[in-house]
Amino acid sequence: MGLATPPTSLKPVIDVLPASVYENPTWRGMSYFLRDAAMYVALLAILVVVSNIFAVLALEVLMGVVVSGLFVVGHDAAHGALFSSKRMNSTVAHIAMLPSFHVYEGWVLGHNRVHHPYTVRQGYDFVWHPTTPEQFAEFGWWRRAVHRFEWSWAGAGAYYAHQVWWTKMMVGSNPARWVKAIRRDRWIVTAFIAGMLALFTLIGMAQGHSVAGILWLDVRTVVLPFVGFAYLIGTVVHTHHIAPDIRWWKKTEWNKYKAQMEGTTVLRVPKGFNFFLHWIMVHVPHHVDMRVPMYHLEEAADAIEAAFPGTIIDKPLRFSEFVANSRACKLYDFDAGRWLTYAEGRRHLAST
Image 1 (cartoon, rainbow, N blue to C red):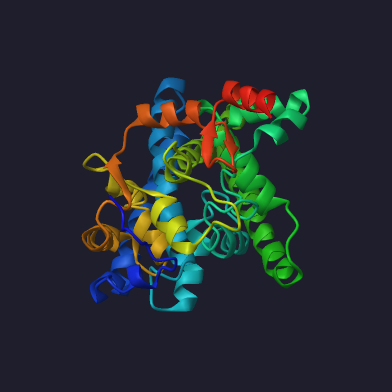
Image 2: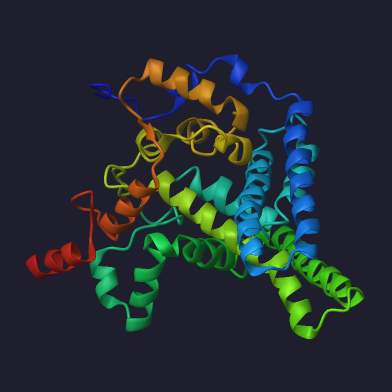
């Protein structure tokens, strides 16, 4: 059970966090960054010499996880949580986000300045923002087909790559004060992709590969790692904010407490998961206070749950539940505050 009269701000929640959850020694953040970077480089070296499609696909699963881990490190640094130094956070975040082709300043704008302050708020939070039955009914056949695929469990990666990475970071328009910095970082990412393709093309030529062999080398070292990352992170973000028991709110009904305490989850993961993905599934305390480093999120979650028992969603992470949620949560009725399937959306329109 939640509180009888819950607060509307996050201050009472932040006040229960112990000082220890904000400790972020440089050596600890750097150790995660260097370890993940070393695994990324090592996997690239292996993919240069391994070309068997079945071996490559197995390696790409691991590569997708490692690139995602680097991204989580960059994400923490972009929040200013990983190091005390603002410059070090920026430098590490820029580098750690390159393997996932993320535009640092674009990410800071969309994630830090929009998604976090306005989590699960209608018309503001763009990450997995629901479509209403009325909006879906106005879509043409192509937009409906895209929505059906991207909101399926198999389409989570396509959604993230299309709606978040491409639309919001790579090509989207931005407020005037952000344009220069985002344009610079888009060029950095573009140069990184071009440089990687050039490097592995030259390596393929030096090894005497055919044109097809060179293209396959480029695909397995540059393209497939991003595909694996997009699918994994798209799935993760879906589990954070989309479920029948996670409500999205109208502007007039929304407040920070409901958004950050009830609009995301704490999902307990199998042993070894956090070695790669750095407590990313312990998401409530991260939304309560972005300054908490990733390796203190479990301690912060324990403090929050002790002070606000029964408020947050805390349960084991199960892939089957993600699949079930993706089937149940297709459209949203903001008046009733509930998720609808496509069939329920049609019945909703027929009854109005």
